Length: 277
Image 1 (cartoon, helix red, strand yellow):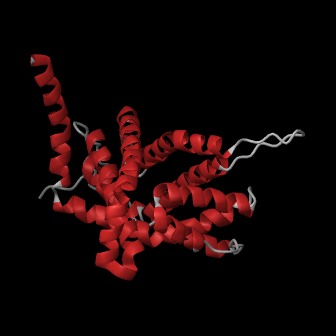
Image 2 (spheres, helix red, strand yellow):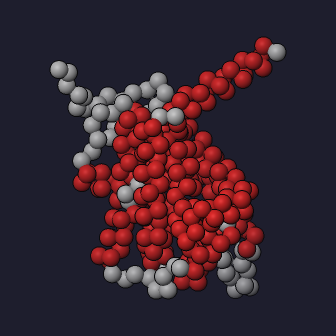
Image 3 (cartoon, helix red, strand yellow):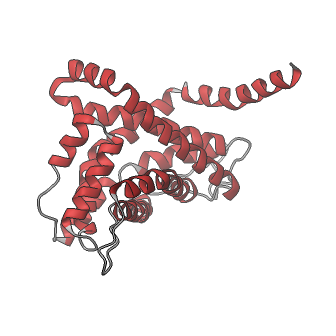
């Protein structure tokens, strides 16, 4: 019995600090800020992804891949609604694309503030510096997302007409989801704070949160009928916006919890610490 109590105690020691962190009002405010920026930047990001991916893939392949990804993350009516409202033609105006990218990177501003707080960094980047870093991160993360979409709809042709069947693409997408998500989280955890967190702590947090986000996706699918009915009853025409907002909030709480876990016992030195009176 003693080893079992020790095992349970270690689990509680790992979970309780996260629960205390989640109970802070500031954490909820930052998570809702991230979720609101996801809501505002979600469709612009889809437009940019659709436009840029058609440089490398056909429209049919691109739309099919995005449709598959949307239905995987947003089941039933929401995935169908988002898929049907994708623009019919890609944007060719690079200024418009840059503006859409700018509008979709707002998620990183509250995340930087949260990460700096977690790591004990007292000085945030300037707004302009944050936007430069955010654009670099959204370009890297978007490229990984486009890569996954392209591989999902991969069809290998030969003289004999050989092609990978749909189930193979689906299987690959499922297997690649966690590694790609973890890689995106690693980039965010490592380079978004105004400092350099320890590499080994960041890698562990990225892998763990990547697994939890995948579990959240399947939990969402399981409770979707009940959740969708409640949201439709309470929010009416704002049903889909509220759904994206709630899901983004829960995902944001997991991302912040991963950063909190990574920073336990570690505080980064600030180049400009606050002066004492």
